[in-house]
Each structure stands twice: as structure tokens, then as C-alpha cells.
Length: 253
Image 1: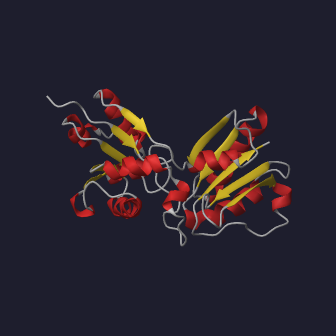
Image 2: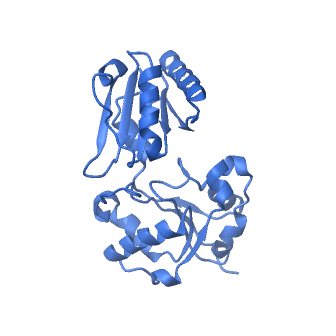
Image 3: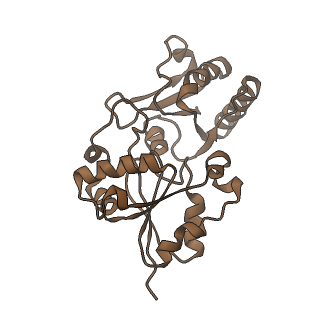
């Protein structure tokens, strides 16, 4: 019986969907790129973006197999919409190749898979099957944004997306602000880029003037933004972000 392969968690650059892309070697270690180039079996959020990522990898390090011969399996849409923990998805079937001895890469469209992106169901299934899980070094937007925010990095929470409906969104913002101010726990969240400005306006309207609000947008890119200041100072400026670039928001004291 062949020894089990490993499940590699392969970070992707943070420039997915952005007009400007940073050179791959500027944002990912050589060792991570080299391992990604050896893999021929993939589980991913989106096959098209994974092929685009592998094309960039191949420009730096020869791929073990041409793009057309790579075996790429997408996670079901239900996992994208409901999340790994809510959909009840059993990912063990996607790991059949690993049980036959093949190493598998897990990739998302940007950043570290299974953090603010689908993939944790695959990791859980790997543990249940006794498959070694190997996280690789690379970009992680949440950690980069938190480190650059000046917010409490010893006690923080990532709460995902906020409600889209204005009243519910405002209520959720007030809840997160209350936790942040009372406990000192930084609250991090994200939004689909085209709704960035709507969220930004809601934050300025809802948060207290002295609450610290941070934003990390386009991190690792030439046009990266990492700023943090009290809401009362943000109100004196125009919106610092656009509707195309992914961003991480944070509130704290």
C-alpha cells in the first residue's frame, strides 16, 4: 500500500482581481514556490484562478506537469456560500489522491487557504484520514493588516463579513465596537470590494469619534494602504479606498 501523500496549504498572492500584480518572488518565499511547482493535484476555491497562479509559479520554477495535465478539483459552491463549518460538507472524497500517495495542494484565490477563505473542511478531513497537513509560508492578509494597524495584536477576533442591510449592519458595528472598547479585543472584518465604500461610510456614521479604525488594502502591492487613526480624524478626509481592491478593516481602542 502506498504511503499517504501530504496536504500542502499553499498561500496565493493578495493581488487577485487587482489591476496591478506584484512579482511573485517579491511576495512568496522561494521554498513555497518550489514546492507549489512540484504539485500536480490541487483542491481550490476556483480552478481558473488556480491555473493563473500556477502559470505565475511556472514562470519562476518549472512545473512538474503542464497546466493542462494538472488535476484541479473545486470546492462545491455551497462551501463558498455557507462556509466550511455551516455547509456540513464532507471533503474526504477530494483527498483520494493523497491516500494513493500523491501530495495535494490546497489553494484559495488570495492569501492563506482556510483563513477567511474556504478550505478548513479539507484540512479537517485530512486530519481524520491521517494525512499530514503542511502549511507553507506566504501572504496572509489578516495578519499583515493587524500588524500594520497598531491595534491590539495580543487579543483579536476575525468576524468575517458584516450584514449588508443598513440597520443590521449598524447594529453589528455597534456590537463589535462595544466588545473592542470594553475588552480591548481588536475586531477585524472584510467586505466584498465593490461594497467597501458603503461599509466605510457606515463605519464613520456609526462608530464613536474616539474609536480607532484601521484599514489595510492592497497589501504587498505597490499601491498598498495601511492606516489607522480615530474616527474623528477619518471624518476630516475623503474615503481612502476604492471599490476594486480587497481590504481588511479593524476597530479597537
